[in-house]
Amino acid sequence: MKSKTNFLFPLVVSILHHFLVLSATAEVSLKTDEASLLALKSYVTSDTYDVLTSNWTLTTSVCNWIGVTCSSRHQRVIVLDISNMGLIGTIPPQLGNLSFLVSLDISSNGFHGILPRKFANLHRFEFINGTSNMFTGDIPSWFSLLPELQHLHLAFNSFTGIIPPAIYNASKLESLVLGFNQLQGEIPNEIGNLQNLTWLSLGSNQLTSLVPLSLFNISSLQRLVLMNNSLSGNLPVDICSNLPELTVLALSDNEFDGQIPSGIDKCSKLQILSLSFNKFSGVIPRKIGKLNMLSILYLGRNDLEDEILEEIGNLRNLEIFYAQNCSLSGPLPSSISKLTSLQLLNLYGNKLSGTLPRDLCLNMSVLRAMDLGNNLFSGRIPKEFENCTSLSDLFLRENNLIGELPREIGNLFNLGRLDLHYNFLTGPIPSTIFNMSNIRGISFLGNFFTGSLPPDKGLGLPNLEELYLGYNNLTGSIPHSLSNASNIFRLGIGYNNFSGPFPRSFGNLRHLEYLNVNDNHFTKEPSSQELIFFNSLTNCRHLRQLWIGYNPLNGNLPASVGNLSSSLD
Image (tube, rainbow, N blue to C red; front, side, top):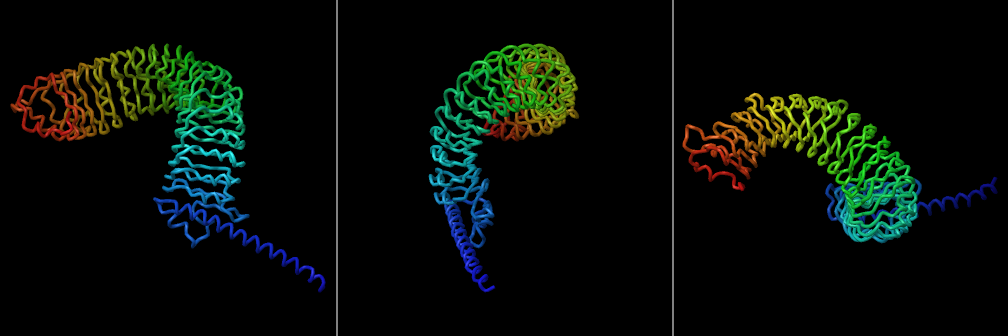
């Protein structure tokens, strides 16, 4: 028994010694991590919410500090997340001593300067997020020395220079997000080396030249965002042949030309297709109608031609469709009423013609904004538009619409802006329009409306800010209840046949900045030789433009004219 005990004793001592050595090593290493983080704290010049000041102290273990996560095995800092803490300062090189660090998130702060070269020693790095700071200088080339790096996010900073070619040697990269900087130069062909890439965002930089074909061969790619650069050239016809996982293709605000690729339907998982503000020409490919997962389609400001395809009605998940200023012609396809998920529709500034489909709003209960302005639409405004019950913006301006405005439009109780200017609408303005309690802007400028405005009880417009009724054939006096629309700051009723004494109630519109009553039949009040309405206008302290010409205002200017707003032009 004694010999057995003699055998076990050295073994126990050895194990205990090994444990004590490891514990001591871990303690020393954790002290290194602690010193690194305290160095960061000392480099922070403004701690808006006092997070580091009050929490990163020696009275608690570094592993319990806010934003710090330690591994259970080694008791070393592996995650540092101090995002959105209102911190201002620079990043110290000592942070490069966090040798077990896997993830660093310093986004949405006010860090500036450059990223320290010592970060290249952190070979366990997988995730770096420095988005929304004020970093400057070149994108560091030493990112390529981080063998485990999978996610690099440095958007919304002030990085300059070119994208370092060495970065494309970081073969494990899954997301590279460098948008909203000031990067220049070309996208090199070596980008095709990143065969694990799922998200590439280089938008809102100053990149130029062609997009390398190798980029379209990264089969793992899910999101490709290159918008707002100066990239040019044609897109390959088979752009989607090797991009089966692509969900986002955002190329707007560049100088791409040629036709929209006819093989776009091969990107069958596309949810966002943004090609607006380029120089694309030709027709919209019919195969776009096969992208049944598409929710956002931006085609505006291109040189497209021909009609809007009937196949557009197949996009049952489409929520946003913008094809403004594209030279599109022909009628609005009836199939567009099948877009039951549509929320925003903008077809402004084309050459679309024919009548507005009566069933357009039949199934569009979630449509919030519709802009069909500056086209060649004719005929009447369908009363069935009242079925677009979620509409907040309805723009039909600058068309050839005729007839009376349906009173049912007044049933769109969520409507905030209604713009029908420069059409050929006739008849009286329905009284229902003046009871739309959420309306903020109305423009009926340049039509042929007749009749008078409804009496006092009809003007329930508490949120109205802009009202344009000029260049019509409206008559009668201005109801006193207009002053109940106390938020109006722009009022244009010129070039009509309004009559009666100049309304003193205008003086109750305290936010008024612009008032145009030109070319009507307003008169002074018969009880005075002075134009006493000026007395009330002195209450409009923000008034900048006042147009009262071509009215029979025969009277003397009162002394109160000198008290008009000092900002008056």
